[in-house]
Amino acid sequence: MCLAVPAEVLEVFADDRAKVDMGGVRMTIGTAFIENPQVGDWLLVHVGHAINRIEKDEARKTLELLTELFSTSTERHDE
Amino acid sequence: MSDALKSLDRFSDKEAVLQVAERLRATAQGHGPLQFMEFCGGHTHVLFRFGLRELLPPELSLVHGPGCPVCVLPRGKIDSVLDLLDRNPDVILCTYADLLRVPGTAGRSLLRCRADGATVRAVYSPHHALDLAQQNPHRKVVFLAIGFETTTPATAITILEAQRAGLTNFFVYSLHLLTPPAVAHVLESPEIREHGTVQLDGFIGPGHVCAVIGTEPFEYFATEFQKPVVITGFAPVDMMLGLLALTQLAREGASGCRVENLYPRVVTRQGNTKAKAIVADVFELRRLSAWRGLGMVPYSAFRLRPAYQSFDVEHHFDIREFDTRDHPACLCSAIVRGVKKPTDCKLYGTGCTPDTPIGSCMVSGEGTCAAYFASGIGLPRRKQNVTPMSTAKT
Image (cartoon, rainbow over all chains, first blue to last red; front, side, top):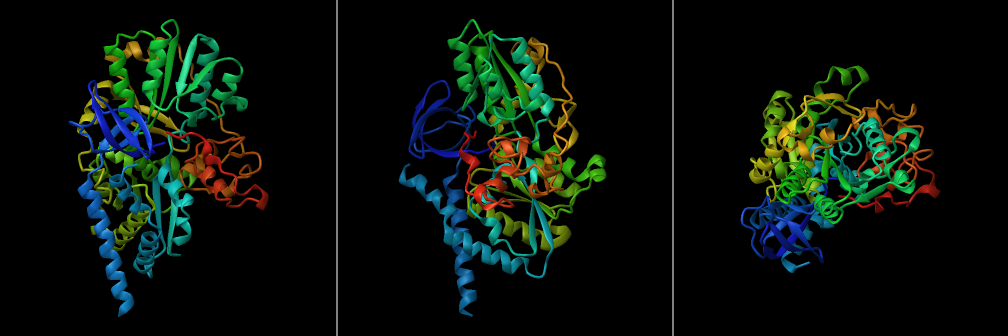
């Protein structure tokens, strides 16, 4: 039920609406909960509304953490 | 999808999942048995769909929690809605598709009610219900609003928009629930103690609920109940990283009883303040609410504030209460508490299947029984490979 889908903002409209690309599906969603949405922002969309921004830097950091984890487990194999 | 957004696909990378699984095995070794509860039905779904259960070390077992709003809805509420439709044939009832097949008394559901002539529409967003109200000014449109904190803001903003548009034929029946009181209730309720409970060493917190309310509400819970909580996302890598972090915290003992946020790309400590403010403006807490499987949980559900009563179904219509009992053999109540498994239920896979659900855990794609069924667990071979996940989810 709490399924939410990442989407990229294509166009920002007045009255808290934006056109987004959701995995190839384009639709207009509500952005009333997002401070100043911009074209190119990543949003997390649930029941036709963006519930939060997806912070690109944080996504990158988690992926880096993963890479770090890989390198340490490889080291362990080498030992 | 844009190339940039595709970088998020790395959270579903198989090699990464296997690497984290290996680390998890090493971390859990010699520290079991550990039993964790994933509260959210979305996480249950991810565990089964990607076969992550098979990757878990033997020391670690998972209990599937009550985090599916459809599964914890008391059957009597469905009967109240069916009764409302029977007495008000001019109503257009809109709700999320998950709810349409949930049976009330004698197997009657909203879908059956539609076949009998009532106007029942599945909507993707509350906006669509609002559109229907604008397109049908001579009919009353009732939006049956169900969901946790992730879903509540969308309902709240739609009520504000209906007010701005001056609509007088749009009504909301709020069945919105809150997660932190339910998590606390799983651990402390005397009623649950009576019915038996399970030892829990930590919780995987609901990532998208926290996108809205933040991690802060779970801090009290971690200290008060001395349990570690890890908030994580819904990609397979997120799920495995979450379990790894939770195992590490559980190993720490008392000092590990805190909240760790492994979903910082979406979740902050404060959550979405704009969404929280709009919800607080439109909704207030009910003193006591019934949850299927958990009994009465104090301050765990939302109703509309009196200022918005012109949009409130409970104010505009006469809602009758029904105390509908579960099917005598149905174990949904024990399953949402994590005390029983679907395979313990006599109805599972025989009388109760995704096509002909008896209990709510089979109706919703995120219900534990539906997840078991989709994976073919405990089913004769011919019933396997039937996917109940084809129903539209919100």
